[in-house]
Length: 282
Image (cartoon, rainbow, N blue to C red; front, side, top):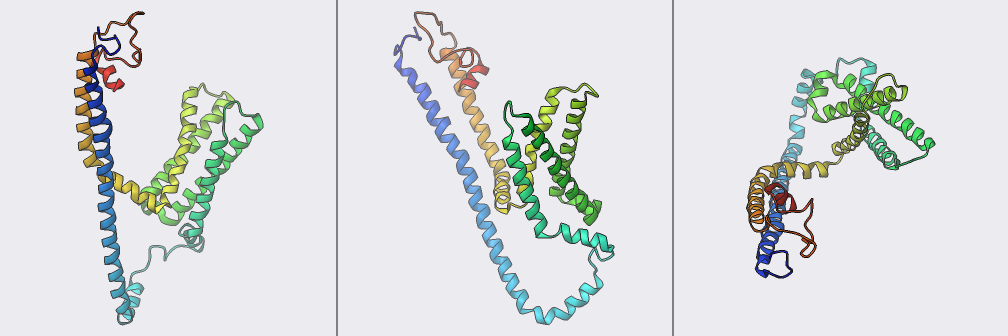
């Protein structure tokens, strides 16, 4: 009898309770935990900045008194690049310059624009132009990584996780170009899916912008710090889904649908006949 419209109005309680508890209450708890952790991190950051300002003020007051001691300490402790050759010092100055970051940011922006220009059944001339642009951007990123390796050395280079990310992006780009050339020249049979995956991985170049975006990095750090609390809420979320999915199978798992009583809204991809599909439907 259940497929008959309005045969059992009390079944509305099942769906209303699911929407209220899961869709509104628990999801708002997710957002609340993230926002609360963001405010805590912001408060901690403000306290840290106030402490740093106070320390900076004290250092300014003692600057004259400690100037000679500081000069002697600097004379005894040479920087790591003091023994570099003239060429390597030039490369080090270039890699530590703010202008290089601005240049790389502009290159990434242009790269994003060129990736957004690609579309289905695009002209051959556009395809060739985008291919050349990809080569140019890859060469620029390769030179950036090589210069940083020369400037900082292997140990200092790999101590920075952002440098590791840059190198991984460069290697993926080189691998993608190599596979594309092999496919064009038909030297080796390559699965086209691999080529498509390598093209999709070009989007990872956008992650290089996070190195310059301090505010976005702070937001990501806040999200990472909130993951333990969100994980507990996630378990509660999954538990509620489990309960309502089991109830859905029990209440609506034996619906008999025919031409007289069609189960509108239910179908192959939305049904309560088994637990998995009930979970997915909810």
